[in-house]
Length: 168
Image (tube, rainbow, N blue to C red):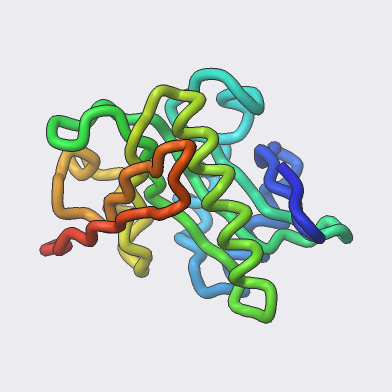
């Protein structure tokens, strides 16, 4: 998906070091061991389109190939929210284009959710513990993690956002 000066694409194993540099520059890089394990378990798990694999990594790049955003996503059957596109990790650079980059990535995530039969997005709270919390057993099933975004109908441009308290 491309809009203006930016494109969203699946991350590949070749992006490992570039994504690590991007996350480090944003202050969002986990330990090297965690990073290697997480990244390599996501790339190549699914093609661009169709049903989601367990975890996918997406990057937003500018026309020069520089990474400007990174996220991990997967489809989840949740007890409360049913079929949702779970986004436990999302980092967008702070800069003059952050709104354009965020909108492009959000639109991509909405399309991926629809393609995968999901009617809700869930964005986890981003903080230093997000990487480790995401990997702990049982965390995904919690109903109080992050922000729930029901998808707008295709004829509606309004998005309703529900923030849930995060008690951990």
